[in-house]
Image (cartoon, rainbow, N blue to C red; front, side, top):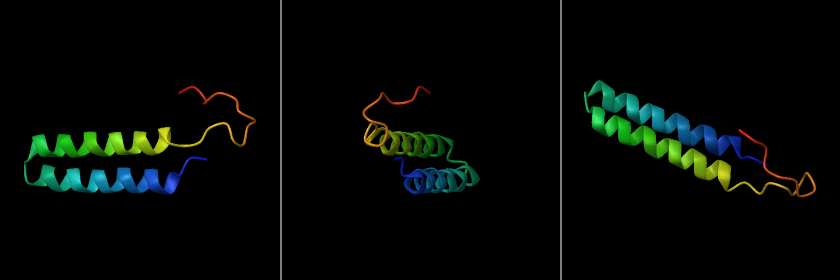
Length: 62
């Protein structure tokens, strides 16, 4: 099952940090922060153990 709390925290904290960088006009740093948050959320999502509850079927598309 997807850990939505961890996904939320990763994305929320990344967005908060990126907004702070934008306020300081550190655009490159803001972009890096957003990419890092995106990658962290993707890792959390992809590390989920698909198939345990649904009898081993494939991961949903999307």
